[in-house]
Image (tube, rainbow, N blue to C red; front, top):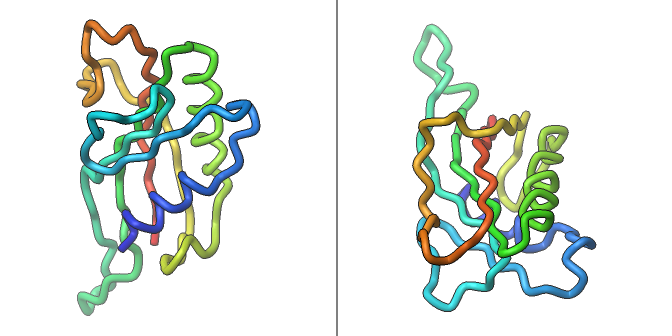
Length: 131
């Protein structure tokens, strides 16, 4: 599944700026004991481009991605690392990614990990994978 492949990619990418901090990565939920610095993502939509005969040629899979940290600089660096996926093309686990696009969320986006008493910084992105 593409979610499992993306989860593995987020977990295994190189985040040098973390200086040994633990990075949590979660799909669709945030565990109660999640590290302060984490990436949360969930699938929001899937669209298919089809040929006249009905055969699906490209699948556009959209994810909401939240880069979260107690430290603003770390959250922003984590978001920049995710944004760098814009140039990604090729195998990602069992999924072949034909193209990738990353953009900022708009002003109406509702955070999934915003708990007012936590005091965390969240940088919200929209990730589109064309597979």
